[in-house]
Image (cartoon, rainbow, N blue to C red; front, side, top):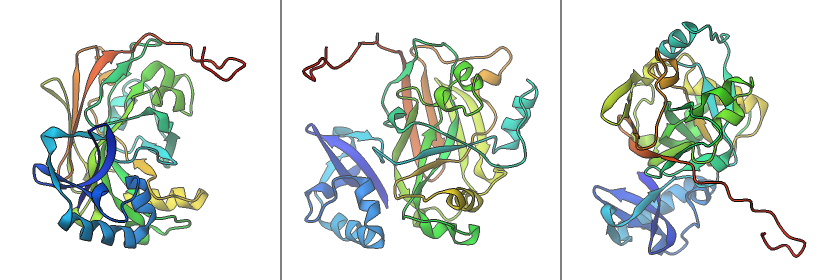
Length: 300
């Protein structure tokens, strides 16, 4: 199944993709309030979705707006330096990673939809893209061995791990430079794991406007998905809806010579074979508005 979060008539809904239509699961008895809630129901939830999809009214995709499939995950984690081609281009600038898995957080407030505008921040113009395969956890789990990892995965999404490079590099945690508002677009829907025979056999491409910048393959990954889940779950509990972004191949703008950062008006498209594509337009960040509470608790 391709499970989606979408908005229609000013309401956020859960649906299932059916060609150029979407079945509105939110109309069916027992519907969850969100895709994350559906995942929290486990196998029972997936079986409900399959049954409900048969009777759900269809809407043309052109008449709805696709939103980020998981609106509020508990975790949004990214693996750095997982493609040899990306490590090689970074090494030319003296940036070297060790052999282990290097994870960082993207704050969940950065999540944006598959067709939302993304902001060139006021704080920096070193705005960059990184097309990545996203893995969505399907059940609460801890101490998962790599061989069993696929059993706890709900499915896959396309992620653009957008980055503000100077903010990223000034801290070894990367978190600030990876977490600006709108800098985590994902989607266009969640493709359940049964639809993807091998997540390490997918072509991944990124375009800026009509120029192909990244052309990689998930088979290049140094650390496989099972190893990622094992590593993370050894440290903490993974929860339904948690998003793991698995690294990016060569071709990012900040490592070109000279660097080619994103500008207002640019359109960034990330496409992964078997999953779909997201496309986001870069716009200047709106002027900040101070939103502080008064003594009466009303915003000033």
